Length: 299
Image (cartoon, rainbow, N blue to C red; front, side):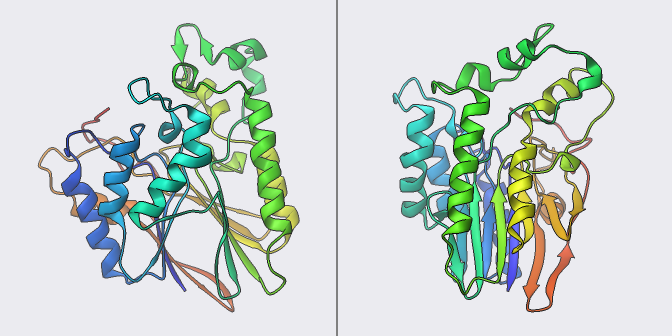
């Protein structure tokens, strides 16, 4: 089974990234994947998300999606709230666009299950040596620097409560897989392992690292025994780590765009290509680091 994965496309409005999106789909098609994964953060606007997923959908592949935090930011004009988007709207958009939103239900191909979750954060990735009090993490603010979820998420849950909810659903999905499942691929937006987080020994970067994921999510994956691959996004720094026999990678593209609008090199670096078989996992192509370094950033 060949898997191709990418995340954090951050598609711009008014079709400004259509050429990039089509270049991604064309490059993915070259590898004839059995499964194509997009691990969140396509757009905070539901209709741009729908349009972009339609452009990305690869014929003859299982197209799988998990939402990212940007995808569930509430929308004042449409009235869509964060929980509504995550629990129902994004699933509807995926079905319309030819994708499966796997946090709703695992996708099974043969003896392999793809289990998905947006994942969330509970500050367990924070650097305790920074001596920043928990109230700053709860408020998502420190010395004027603000994690944007503070302004854009409108549900009533604390971060710890929502992390617990999503981890409970992950546990349920793993426990109720059919008996014939031998291998599990976990797909999330937020990170399940602290080792995937890139610390720079500088602020506010390392303050924001607390919002990358949850240690508790990774513990669930390690305890299952069938999970051999974790694919995530969110951090915008691509990493690969090995944890108790499990391979975990992050596959973000990011905000960078080449000034000449020639996307071949960026797209080639952005996609990860993996081969999964009876003997295990083989990584055919994976570029680590910040692939947008040195490029003009768009927001």
